[in-house]
Image 1 (cartoon, rainbow, N blue to C red):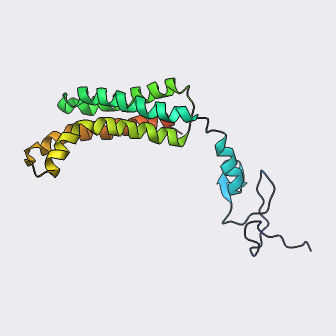
Image 2: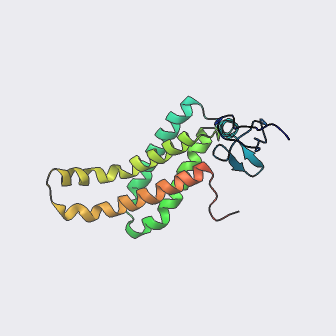
Length: 172
């Protein structure tokens, strides 16, 4: 009969499951299922840090470039009316590729979110006068003019985030 083994994180929980990376005993609460087997949370966290390569300047550059390019694209897109539905995703993809080129294709979840935030703020800039007018008790007839900046912002932001993060939709 072998001695009982316990989870390194929960010493009261008996287990025979081991992390396939560090060989520590882990319970089912601590185990993370990966394509190569079960791993402890520390090994998974350490492995994901390898893929974060962005430098501090990349965060600033990513946000500013996305903001400026989205501001310019928003100026054009909001004047196109219905066609913004077709052009906003392309604008978001172009903005994401521009950020990737300037940052040397370095990666970080924070960089992806800051790029998306820059696109969103740049796109909503044209809605700001309408929103300020509404907040100051102005005429509500401007409400319809919020439609195309909002559509542009939604479509361009999501396209930029997914394109920059490298998320493959619909592929396996």
